[in-house]
Length: 177
Image 1 (cartoon, rainbow, N blue to C red):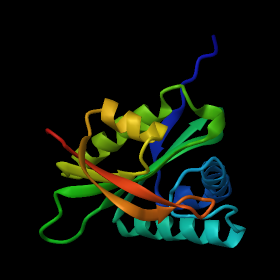
Image 2 (cartoon, rainbow, N blue to C red):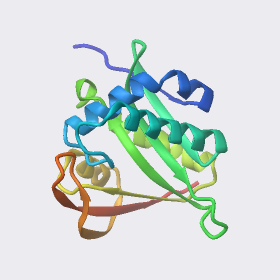
Image 3 (cartoon, rainbow, N blue to C red):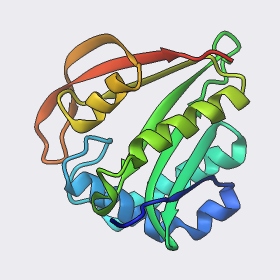
């Protein structure tokens, strides 16, 4: 049995800049596999790079946490935490773009990324997390297994990578210090 132990790190904006090419590949892999993460397939290189440039700017501004998982020097996953900056919302954060490369799936990396996001949220003083996901996909079942609570569903909310409409389900989780 092959040991699968990726390193998960919170990366700075500077470190993230050097990871843009593999992060672009990770995003492309997720979208080409049908993940509804805000992009249509195929993603033009300029669009994918612009997206990661925006993420890096948010990391530099302190409004987003970016986790990157690597194995043997290769990026195999990432996850983000959007930190609410509104005065009435500094206790909450949004889980965003939990991506696991297709070659690294079914080894617990998504679960490990979610656990690390919770640690980072607590470190940032966040006690409420929320996210949205496409129904009836592996990610949804993972969130349920990890104790996330269903908050509702909106029909025809987003487009799949091939352009079809799908509903989106919203979940939340209260964190205890």
